[in-house]
Image (cartoon, rainbow, N blue to C red):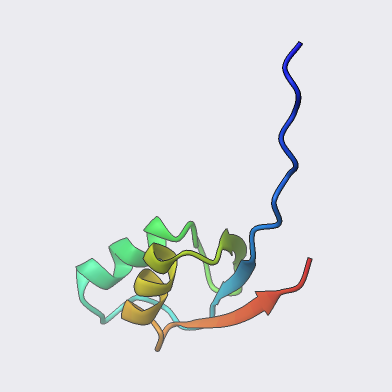
Length: 70
């Protein structure tokens, strides 16, 4: 049986939707949906990757970001 690799700790960020996408560009609404946010106040924990950071940067006026300590 193969040995299991040690599970590396991946840093995470908690993203919360604090403002509605109504009245903003459809591309921004698509980014919010791509982050997995569905409604106001909804939070998701995502890996702290450059792609996620770029998405958050595009909609930084609609979301709140917190770093999650594991």
